[in-house]
Amino acid sequence: MLNIEIWSRDEIHEFYTEIFVSAEVRISIKDLKLLFEYIGRLPVFAYELGDSAWRRAKILEIDKMR
Image (cartoon, rainbow, N blue to C red; front, side, top):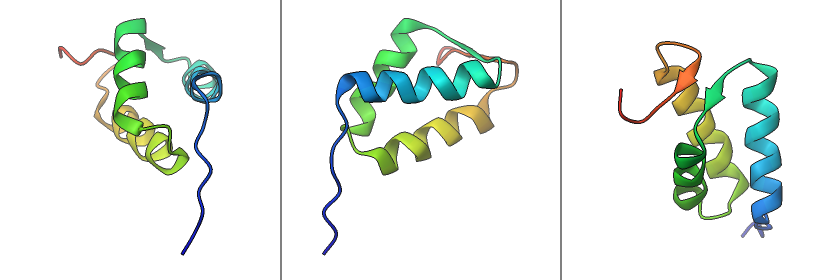
């Protein structure tokens, strides 16, 4: 069994900020908080959901209302 360390809210924020900023993607604070809730502080989910959000984005702005 693998022991996966959970991330702090700061680590999650840093991860998403770095990947979206480096790709010049804008994400609202509301949607960023939604990602925080869905990943359950597990890094593997952070990567998967970040990738899914990126793939579904039609423009360089992530907004769950579109």
